[in-house]
Image (cartoon, rainbow, N blue to C red; front, top):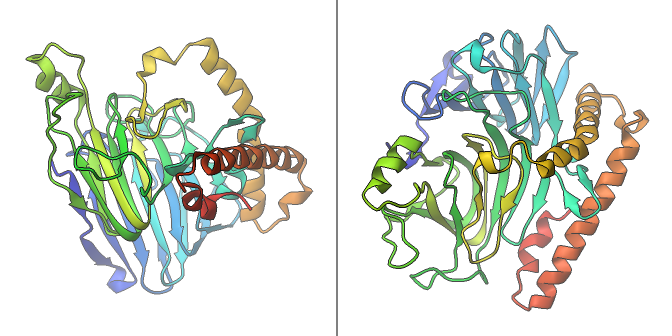
Length: 373
């Protein structure tokens, strides 16, 4: 199965827009269809209504009309879960671009209600000392649009999937790999992850570890160049990993990889299958990872996390919908919680920046453009 997928665009509706099919549900381990849509002239796009979908506006904006919501103006940085049976028609201007993950079966769209998430309000999901959905680290900014508990799509294994919007920064100053190259190190050992790169500034690439995984003398596949027309797919399913590690007697490991970015950044949309729970193990120079779901679900810590998050999710839904309808969200009761969350997020980011300045490695200059203003 391909690790690097390059967009192959096909014209639709007489050249009104073009579509790139990236993943196919009958082929890829997530069991979802993943596509990008690019408007070439002002036109209408109608997604399939029977299956359920995750929609993100990457560039431009669309006017969305549906049977169950008011007319909405969805701009870049807006994300919508459309349940099965959600009949929608989208009108886009030239240059508008969308990303869609679609379920092939209505039964895999577990949520019955549409969920709207504008990144302006996702950035206000924080309490003092804890960012809930807007995660800034020395290496990346992750906007965690849909998580494990959100009632959206299921993969073919029956697990909830997540939908993240991530930007990875220039790696200058990070610890080096075995080639002496600074890299962002990741090892998602319990899930697959297609990463749809839509904006790449500078030079970027990814390489995947070869089995058997090893702390010493790890063997690697080739570097794959990344640009705004590529997807890199960490696509080992659990059966593959188990068979590949069977001879060693070690715990199955999947999707160990490294990313190099020089002179810019990489922005992408990604699916995790199964979805993470929001608790990440992260340390520069080590392999960032999410643990086994069985070690998190049902724990008191996770239950408290969900209780903390609940009012912020209602805030995001109400304010996102008001903004998309053309109303002033500042008139909503939820605006006060948003301001409190945004204040907490800014304090978290200011503390991170102070740590980076104190380290003397210069990483603060890479996070500065992505901090809340």
